[in-house]
Image (cartoon, rainbow, N blue to C red; front, side, top):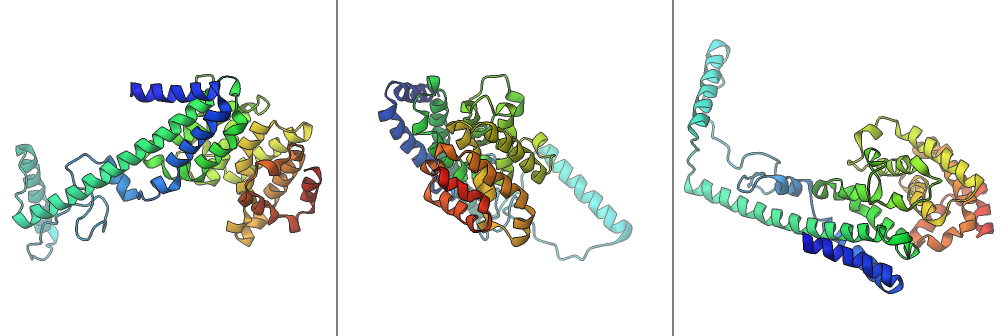
Length: 338
């Protein structure tokens, strides 16, 4: 652990000394270690196996992955029909008593050679899964560790070389799919927890301008909830998502109308704007319900147009916005400014 900490610190030092040389190499490492191909193979069952104590089978071995958290072996029925009334209650009581006595004695059911072979085979499979998930967790945590040290570069030196690229990498699947085996490490890297305000923290929102103030938290929460990320702080799930989106968008529109946000702050807000504008995965009813949100996003982007936004958008993001153009003439001014 000390060696890993020293290595991460060295990454930050190199990025500070020679940002033009070191930062692109570090971004490549982040992209490699946080690529969806690294963690996409992991299923909820694999995570359950990884969390379970070693030596205890989690999944029924016949057929593989047929059910979750069930014993490998089922005790065969004795062929006697279910009894009713007092007789059944007496039988249930006797079964519970025998189980309790067996538990106190610490005895274990003796397995046949065939059953034991099935158990051993399943345990071997789960051991392999547990090892692979742990290796993947180490790779992902390494990528997140590099990002934390990029955030800590003094005076945000070279931030334009990595911020939006890394933010895109984190939001393309890490926060959505890796929570099961990295906990809140990914979401904490993107969003400061409400109870962490005033304490030392390392997250992407830390680098935004003070104009956003406390708004940086609901901006991040709104995006995570739109992406259906389960690791959202519980106290931030009580407000209806539509109301949260509108509250955030009205505030962003107001701030940008006064004066455009700086580039880093805008980049932090942009994923939420693009998520709301992505009408390709919305039904006609959802688009109608979100019309007010979409209009606010387009107005916000129009006020930010002086930053020459197309220079920081990838082709897929531009295509998302283009889908809106025929229906919202308001946004035509965006291209005129850029």
